[in-house]
Length: 281
Image (cartoon, rainbow, N blue to C red):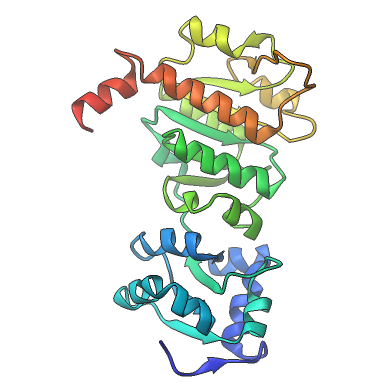
């Protein structure tokens, strides 16, 4: 590891990394911060996924495999003091590793042919957004779309909540909901809005065959759901049934139920994902 240790936040290199905590600088430089060993590991596994790595001496010893992988990928590794790491990190208890990563988003055209897509419309909470991204990854989704009315997926809290999934699947950012829905419907996908007040029941929709083909789920704001104009773009509003006394499910939980129910239906014998798996695609 580099012998020089950065001990001042006034260093131009440290100042350059710190300013990526602000969206305006992230957008200008098309770089963001990924904090912690899990995020750094997944970023390093992606070719060109890390531009530079900052690590405390103790974290470098504990995660020697990540430092070694960074050097193997010709990624500059900078040793920093605990005090400087506290300024770079965005958590109360930093884990000693912060990577500067190039943006990973792709054009909307990349979702053509997708079988399962999550569209985040008016989702403002970065923790919820990152958790939906992580869930979509786990459910085998082909892409996640962040509309222009949603939170920045490169927000530090969103990156952490995704637990590395930001680096796993195509992510589209800053597109109008109408544009995303038009493309997905043009590709033959059913476009459902997840809405607690929806007339259609998730299980009934699945039983009727509404989730067996390509599907895009549109998820809305944590507090007030989707606006009427966005609902009107979809094929209908679908609610997750509540069998107990709970008033509702939060966004991330509802998204998990919708995505996994769809993944299950698509993997039934004869479904598109089942055929894909059988073909070894």
